[in-house]
Image (cartoon, rainbow, N blue to C red):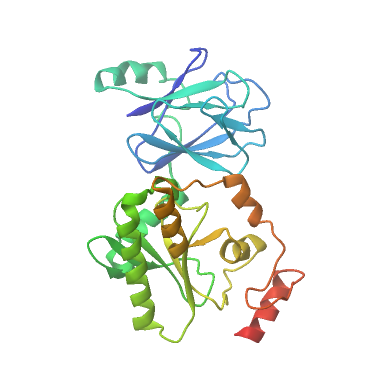
Length: 302
């Protein structure tokens, strides 16, 4: 079991829910956080596993991790490991440490937070949407292909006529968790995904790759046809996530891992800028004015 423990001891500990569940935290009478720069719904905490949580910034004022070394802006998310620190506001002393607690400590810890709306008993616990892939990939009815190390499923919100996801069965939360030792697994994902395409869509062009900053927990390789003809493709962010360097082809990522010999560094600030790029056709030099204009233009290529 984990808690977020106030390093200054001025604020109540935040009891965290079970793995796969989430809570929203912020300014309240129970948390004793009174600074108006902290929103009432300032962050969402998602418990990833027994040693890590993911923090999604909801409030407009930045929070931070690891003594302000990583700034978390609105809409951004980051993992926090046990014994690492988090601040509700960067540059302040509203600091908490992610702490494991022993069974013997649970009773006293529960007493300390019994009256708090941050505790498991009084705060509504939610299954976070970003964990949806884990349940989807485990459902046999969704599995288009499966072997001892991976599975292929359909994307629930396809951005093209044919859009699938290849996922490892091993629990791997983000691209940052991958190192050189995972190259054989990634090559297996790549090989089986290509075979899946060849067996089912031999005359259709596809790309295989990852979003630099995925919205869903559990790494997944997109297998997406290049027509981009789908009602689920709605905005510039959708388009740019597949047609700028924000989309890292799996062959490129394998090469990056191979050359780095460690983990691939993902500069979130740089990659997020790609989502704001001007629209541009992926097959010619046309620069559409907006998404309706782009969709009308794509019909020429399709």
